[in-house]
Image 1: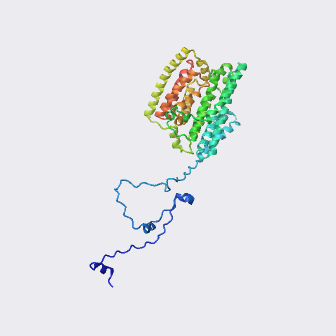
Image 2: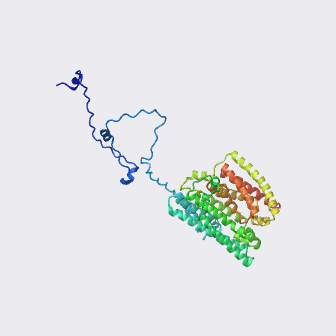
Image 3: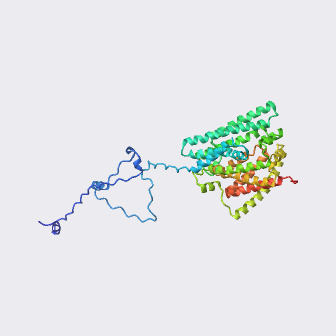
Length: 456
């Protein structure tokens, strides 16, 4: 019997084509992927193995040779089909440093109620910082935990109620000699201050067609940014309520009505005690600012300082800051002159300069000028231009900065403060908070020096 090769060599016989070998099913090893976390009925149907496809369809044609492309093949991070998305990654663990810092603030605030003397004054300076830092920490935790987000809004509501009570108390002292009419005005101040809670819990300004993207530089609104927006708008309105209703700055009006009022609001601390209180407040403000931008929760120390804009500056930047301070002083003189003439032309009320000098007389010394330059320059810039401006933009943060002065200034001086704040906001945007703090501190330092009586 001839072999197949011999049979193929016989003329006239067709060649014998051998049949393809039968491929056995080779089980594929299990591959762990994100699809293991989903129930079987949610997954797409299984893809047949390569050997089964060959047996069913025969030998496929070889794939075409594609031209080579530069770079590695694209990486597929999600092995699931498009209808399935990978699970959300777990948030980074919260650093214990954030809770330690917050615990120190809370302990200091509580101990201030029981410890007298200078140590008690030091601890008392933590009250305002503790409230806002606790609210900020709860807001950052609320990015992942709904209960913390609710706590942050409850703290904001309580803060606005305290502000309404404060406005009512300061207005009552200012209108103590006006009888029934004064009582009505005090009640109106408190009611309108309480209504400022509404914009806090309805922060819809980010949805309005007012060019808020231009103001804030972003359209990404997280729960933290919404809380900052509600807090800023509500406190800005609340701080202006006494001036709007009474027609006069409440602190200056109270000083005119009562000679003992200045001693009462300072608790007879005297000039040196007031300067120390400013330094105490600055220490707590700087620590609370670190927590207010998420240190230990979303940022480490380096990222926190960068977020606040507190950066080391060069000799050139220091020279630029000194030059900007001189320019701001010149602008302030021209601005005050123009505002004063405008107010006089329309017959509007202006700020009582003598009352302002009496209010700040404790700081009219060279040492007071230095401390005011450091505390007001650094503290206000970190709080306003460091924390708020990157979140809410120059305009809205500057409105809050201006409203904080509404207890001692009339509208003419507030207009001057607003323009000065806009300049500082632009400096912060183009450089950093360190430069704007130097300019702000230098500006206040020179103004205090100029206000010192010549005989001293």
